[in-house]
Image (cartoon, rainbow, N blue to C red; front, top):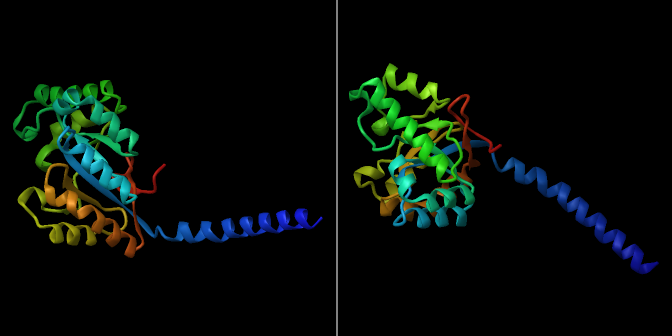
Length: 220
């Protein structure tokens, strides 16, 4: 009987602990932000970025160029396996606003195909290169069921921003907002642990970007 009583007590404690821990864990996310990384994938940078994100409990949206998704399909699959979301960032990263409708269509449609063929699923989010868009770009994106995503905060990592500046940019994020970062800057990679700490200290979690609203929300 003593053994049985001990087992029952242990089980009760475990249940009580689970009940106590779950709300506390849920309360840790007072809001969600969208971390985004443009210009991948590549053998040179994607593995390190994914490792850093996973080690720090972060998920992000990777806006891939079609030409690189076609060249490095294993890295697209690695992004998905690491729990990231994959978006469309055009095929060759042109200034889409300077192109005709047929060229814009080619840039977007070929990227959809390349990402899908690489195992990244069918993207539902689209980021125009340089954040440049117009009615034609938006129309073509809508044709392929894509929600256009710009950003609320620019980390400046493409312009040689320091690690501290990249971390500070992430610290400006508020619930639902999206930040622009890139896979290739060394300082971005170095900033990831501090980004995770900064967000956690403010009760913010890395979420997914909703194709319906374009805002960061809790992962589905």
